[in-house]
Image 1 (cartoon, one colour):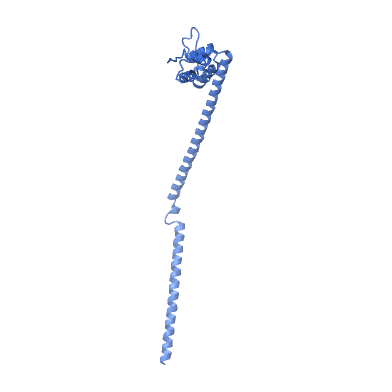
Image 2 (cartoon, rainbow, N blue to C red):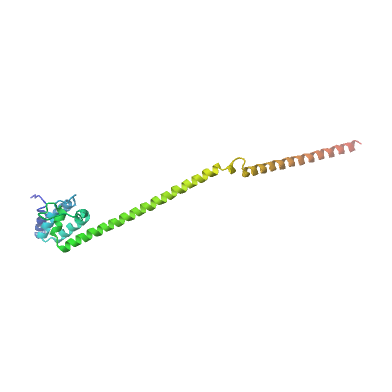
Length: 207
C-alpha cells in the first residue's frame, strides 16, 4: 500500500527497509531526505540527525555533516546562544549540539578549510582582474600617447607643403624636366645638322 514519508519517519523507514530487505523503499527514502536537506534552510536537518543517531545510521550522519559544510557555513560560524531550550538556534546549530566533540571539530575544520579555499580563489580572481585592468590602462595610455604623437606630427611645419622633403621632390622633378628639355634640344640640333648636310649635298650636285 501507499505511505507518506516525513522528516520524522524517514530514517525509521530506511531502517525497516534495510532490516526487512525492502529494496523498493530505500531509494524513495534516500531521495526524500536528500531533497529535503538540500532545500534552502534545511529546516529538518536536526530531525534527521537525531533520528540517525537513534538508529545508528552513521552513513546518514556523515551525509548531514557534509551537507552542513557545503551549504550552511555561515550558520556554523555565527555565534548564537543555544542555551535555555535553544529558542534562538537554527536547525543546523541544533544539529551540531547532537554531534560528538570529535564530529563537531571535523565539521568546523572542513567548514574553515572550504572557506579558506574560497577566499584564496577570490583573491586570485581579484588579482587577475587587477592585472587585466592594469593592462587595459597601459593599452589606453599607449593609444593616447600614440594619438598625441600623430597629432603633433600632423601639425608639425616640417610636414607642410614647403617642407624639405617636398622641396627635394620638386627639385628632382625640375631636374628631370631639365634633362628632358636638354635631350629635346640635342635631338633638334642633330636634326638641323642633318638638314644642313642635305642642303650642301644638293648645292654640290647642282654645280
